Image 1 (cartoon, one colour):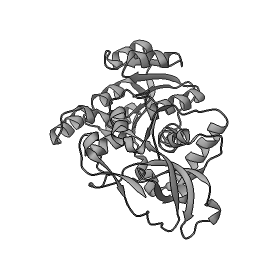
Image 2 (cartoon, rainbow, N blue to C red):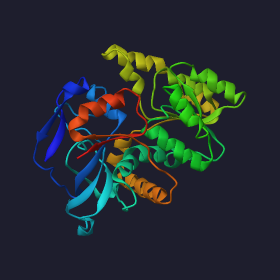
Image 3 (cartoon, rainbow, N blue to C red):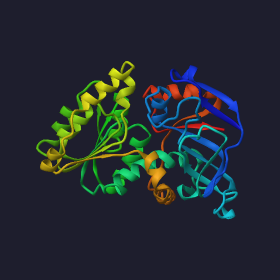
Length: 339
């Protein structure tokens, strides 16, 4: 089978190599999926740059989400899965023509869901649903802030939180994206030209935010905490601010210093919470949660409650081009690799 290997950390056009390798080894409780499409995630950009601690050292096959057909099952798995089209989350290995993953973390797909949209469900929408409905429940009427709202998780959060009846604020990187979100009833701020804390405070007046969904880190962490009121929750699920800095350990130290110290007693006094989200760790310890969320999302899609936005489709041979587009922050929605 073909697989895309990250051979070294660095620029997209220098980092990847397509290789012919043996099929993956099927383990107990697993299924082997012949991949139709693989998904890209911003964590892939961090991994390519050597900024994602969980990623094994190169050479390694990245990728967290795929859609394809089950062609074999491991010990303890019903043969009824063979021939079924599924979406699944993987712990790396997704940039390949075949992957093996736990059967408890997959979901069968109806014909009504296109493969590219189903792939977005496996990571972006699972992450969004986990944050807004599983780990904590965002409620009707609550004021929420979504960072990088035009991205894959951001667009998923907007759809899920609109369904809940929340008042949504957002940060995006261009005036064009501000206008697009305004048509959806979202109050968005271009972080490249405005201080979002000042702009959102103008809208809030004496009120406060209830929840923020932060994939940026850095100075945005302190700003979000200042915008939260009693009972406020900050969901931290990324640190993309690190990618825009000069390299080395000093850049990582600056990221940490920008975020500041978190003092538990102050959280207690303000009745606030900070929740870290790493879906790879969730999938490691509780793959059944992934399967439950995926099944819920497939049902929501079938009912027309959600519809993933596809920001770009590339052949697997165009992996460098796909990475460059995702890293540019010009994309909206999910980026797909086709096999």
